Image (cartoon, rainbow, N blue to C red; front, top):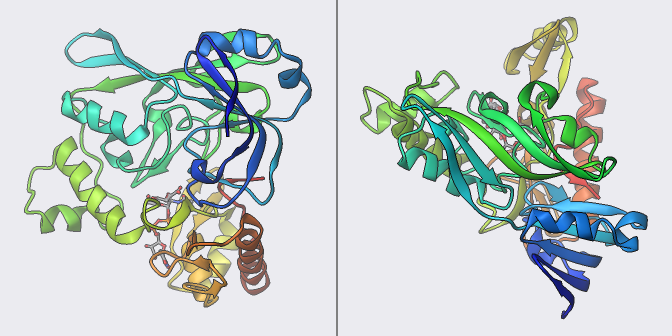
Length: 346
Ligand code: EPU
């Protein structure tokens, strides 16, 4: 693989392998791969015919994507780095982070400087730029609570926009940027972070973990430590085995349907989701169908967590997708609940 063009702030490679750029580690290629180190280069890049006419895919660290085939156009990777405190009144700060920063590094940076809020989101794989796109969430918190605004290149308008939190259409694992994927390229995120905040420790297992650590007065760093320990125990580590975290979203159903299912399945975890809806545990539904640990070749449902699909070595994206379909059909037949993939499936 050799660079075919080197510009101010970007590099273009032809027929590039993406196997090292997706955490499932499945083979796939891109017709053109562009690493963008300076978002200012986007104006020039989007002026090129290839970017106007060919399908475009924006990739971060590839921790929420499954390639079942090659990408027939341009893959754009935003590699811009940098963290800057824009203002800080001693209680709260506004912090700008370039899209290419690693999410967990930024969480650690914020905790190290005495900010609170991101501790429940520790160890989530991926980049800062990807965080608002699917409104990452874990252990009772979602990133939307801390996003002040998102800076994105708008392909329709041909310029950079600052989109305030209220206009980002955040929802459970969803946002404007996910719904209109072809339009926006996130280049930076501005966060509003407090120094003091009541730790959020209500999610199942968090109090127990803190108690096991001997913590009686939880702080942001100790909550992060407890959650990191839970995650390391429960979720397969993408550095060791290919995966993209939860492969399905927890399904939202109306409360009547949730009550009916709960009547038949008293163990089923159900969480209120507002607007007459309830969220069901997809992991529980999958495990009840007997799929936990199921392996087809190198594609498998994790033995550690039923919601995570893993690549034991040489599975293709198509094989992982075939397994996902089998899981989805099984859950639908047994419970009448449709599971929706959480990662982007190409
Ligand atoms: N459960 C099972 N079998 C399993 C695992 C879990 O039955 O193999 C049941 C248990 O009853 C458990 C319940 O499912 O109490 C919930 O499990 P867990 O706390 O692991 O959470 P989850 O709903 O499966 C969601 C997020 C995760 C996030 C955790 C913790 C989604 C799609 N997933 O999983 O996010 O880490 O909560 O907050 O919302 C991700 O998005 O990639 C991700 C890993």
